[in-house]
Figure 1 (cartoon, rainbow, N blue to C red):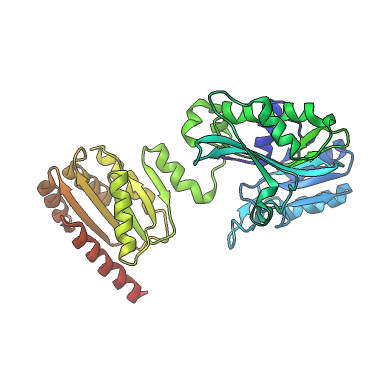
Figure 2 (cartoon, rainbow, N blue to C red; figure 1 turned 135 degrees about the horizontal axis):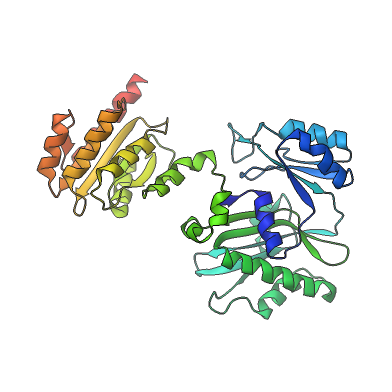
Amino acid sequence: MKLLEYQAKHLLKEYHVPIPEGFVVKGLTELNRVVQQLGGRCVVKAQILAGGRGKAGGVRLAGTLREAAAAAEDLLGKPLETYQTAGQGEMVNALLIEEQLSFLKELYFSVTYDRETQTPVMMLSAEGGVEIEEIAVKKPDSIRKVHVNPLTGIQEHHIRELYLSLGRGKEGYRAFTELVRNIYRLYMERDAAMVEINPLVLLPDETFLALDAKMIIDDNALFRHGDLVEIRKVPDDEQQEVEAREKGLSFVKLDGDVACMVNGAGLAMATMDMIKHHGMEPANFLDIGGSSNPQKVIEALDIIMKNPRVKVIFINVFGGITRCDDVANGFKKALSRRSLEIPMVMRLTGTNEKEGRRILEEIGYEAFTDLKEAVARLKEVRNGIREGD
C-alpha cells in the first residue's frame, strides 16, 4: 500500500519526526485561508502516488496568493504525467500547501528491507534531492548503508556510522539520533516496506526536517492497521490486484495479452514460462488456489476480463485438491452470466477430469489434457488473432 505524501507525513508527525507546517487542500475555495495562515509564501505540491512529480511540474513555489492560486488551478483536478505514468498521467485530487523554509543542505534517508541479508537497511546520502536516482547509479559510494538485526534493533553504532558519513560537527548528533530512532520505530511498528525521506533537510540550527516523504506499507500486514486501510488510495494500475486480494486470489498484472488462470503458484509460473517459450506474453499471474468453490472461478474471470489488452484466455488446471468438475461448473456459471467474446483455451487434468471435460463440451469448449498440446493450440489461436488484427 502506497501512501500519499500528506498521509506519510501524518504518520511521521505521529512518531515525532519534524515536518513542515502544511495543509491539505481539495478545492480552490480553501486556498485563500491556507495561504494566509502560512504567511503568503508557500509550496504547492500535487498529491499523487507516482514518482517524479517534481520534474513534471507537480511541486511549485509561490510567493503570493495569486501565484499559489495559479499553481493550484493548473494542478488540481487534472492529470499529472510523470516518467512513471507516461502517456496517461495520474489525477491530482488533492494538494499539500506547505510553508517555504530555508535550509543548509538536502540529504537522503530511507529504511527498507534488504532481501540479500534478510534484514532492514538504513540508507543515508549527503546528496539528496530530485537527482538521487542518478546519484545512486553514478556515485553509489556516496550512499551509506547500515544493516540492522531485527532481533536486537537499532544500536548506537548504527546511528554513529550514518552521522559520521555526513561530515558534520557534533551539534546535530542528538537531533539526528532522535530522528533515526523514530523513523526506524515507525518502519517496524507500521509494517512498512519502505520509508523514504527525500529530501531530509538540515536546518540552520543543526536540526533535521522531512521536507518530502514516501511510504509503502506491506499489504499482508494491513489487517493490523485499520486506520491505514480507511485512507487507502489504490492506483489505477493496481485496482485489479487489490480486488483479487480481497477475493482471496493471487493476481499480478503483467504487460502481455494472454490471460492465465491456474491453480497453484508453481504451476502458474511454469505455465507462464511455457507461454513465453512459445513467443507469447502473459497478461497476468493468477492463482485460484486449491479451493473447489466455483465462485472463485467466476471472480477470476471477472478480473481477467477487466484488462482490455487481453486477446486470449488460457486456463490450466491440475485437479488435486481442486476438482476439475467444480472448475468446469465455475466456467459454466460465469459464461451463463456474461458473454465471452475472447477465445479461451483450456487444459484440464486430474481429479474428476472426465466429468469436467464433459461439462465443458456441453457448453461448446474443448479441454486438453496435455500441456504442450494446449499451449500449441493457444499459439494457433493467438496467431490467428494477430493475422485478423
